[in-house]
Length: 467
Image 1 (tube, rainbow, N blue to C red):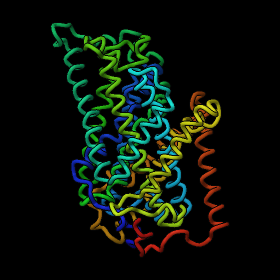
Image 2: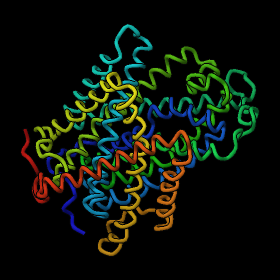
Image 3: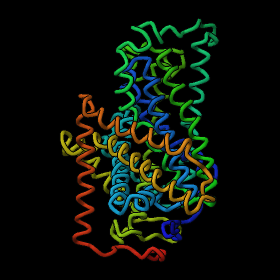
């Protein structure tokens, strides 16, 4: 196995250990947990905790696989390179562009969500203007240097993690009866139709819906290319994120459904309603601020990771070379601006085409994320065997029970995709995701037909000069 894919000398290794750890944790704890979890709770009742557990275990397996590959082959572009090495140019092209598409979509969604959250306090400002301001602020953060991105993400993630920890502590005290003299409050887990009031099927459909909420932990493997100790940083970050994410997600969901009846109208704002039930003053304002932090974190990370993936695509000729240039700080300015422009264009589509273009972006993203994870698992299955044969010393982090658990993860993801076809609410997202996949494949063959040579530098070169 060659090392031609590894590293990118244009980037600066400025991210420290604390940045990497919080990037890994912050990437998973997004607005989906605080807001989107209501959809799963309303569908599955208290058993929503099992939905998140099933999906969480699957994501843990994928992150472990990615951690194995990233420590053995810390590549600029991460799983884009792994897909190309393991499955060929088409798989690499599809993985890279679908991942970029996912995150520029996130940039648009989070800009709109952030604008709505700010309007909670300042309703007089138009949504589009606030979305533009948020995009410009986060763009400026990313343009300065990777160290600036890392610092912002460290503090954003710290606030999110701190908020979850406080919620876990206060919520636990409340339900066991130690919160200012209150009695135990665990009856809601079974009082309204039982733990699984609508049966077993909604648990699995809820697991399908929850898949997109976990997406983001993989950012740390992309950021590793700008870490001083890529292999060690990934090993620590991916190991720490596994247990903490399961505790944060499963623990907080259990507390929410124990505090607020799953069939209550208040469950539409799960965490706000839980804090209000506990008696925390200004619960709505507190959670609005925490969710805004989560949104800004996702927006910050979306611009960062989409630009780095676009930069990696230029190295293989899969994206125009004009986007490959970096400035003297090692920042891919044009790649960042591309994400900003496309992100704001998507925001404008929410006004221009609220019933067509923008809903397509929203509905396709979860399925696109699942496709990317599936390609990661397939890549690990092939590259692990190659590494064992050619470079066993590189396997610092190993996938558990290989190849059996890898096979289980692949089967589970294929099962989720198949199940989506039979779940009415998931059919449109599946169709939108498949359409996105078809477009990516078509673009690959179009690129091969019209640009059969390389568009970018040869693998042995560092790429375009700094601006």
